[in-house]
Amino acid sequence: MKKPGFKCHVFVCLNERPADHPRGCCKHRGSEEVFMVLKEGVKKAGLSDEEVRINRAGCMEHCEQGPSVVIYPEAVWYHVPTPEDAEEILREHVIGGKVVDRLRMEHIM
Amino acid sequence: MKKPGFKCHVFVCLNERPADHPRGCCKHRGSEEVFMVLKEGVKKAGLSDEEVRINRAGCMEHCEQGPSVVIYPEAVWYHVPTPEDAEEILREHVIGGKVVDRLRMEHIM
Image (cartoon, rainbow over all chains, first blue to last red; front, side, top):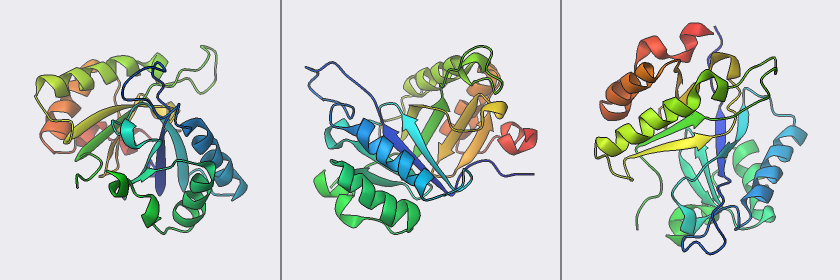
């Protein structure tokens, strides 16, 4: 029996709020581009569906620190402000298995 | 400094595909109702935002076993066919911390 799930399950918040909402939203902070960098990067790297899943997610309640990305099962939360940062997370964490300390959400909370 | 994240992070697939798609989709299998049972149940139980988050998710690639729910960080995957099953997962796992073995996805794969 195949075990369900993935070795690396990445959730990217793509929630969108009205432009004048006081909390803002990850979508307006650039999360769609972050999602695409991760999604296409995993495909290019040839990682299998059983290993890695880059997943769309609704609001994960860390809007002020967004764009928000969380990687499970290790539960590492990232603030990913630019596509270059998304590339670093792809290369170092998703492919390489090493946490990118400088982008951890703790550092800006 | 507050640590980001939740003790119990629940993702419910709400992906919708065209009605004639061969894989079907969690939305047409009833995932919106599953989501609402969990979301409202957590509120009613008075669980804090730091403890539990019921999250919308896009396709999690287990469509044939949907409606799909995964609970992290423990990475337990559930097949949740009815609102009553969602209530059981809420009561036993989300509130009580005990895995509901009979609804684990492994059992129908």
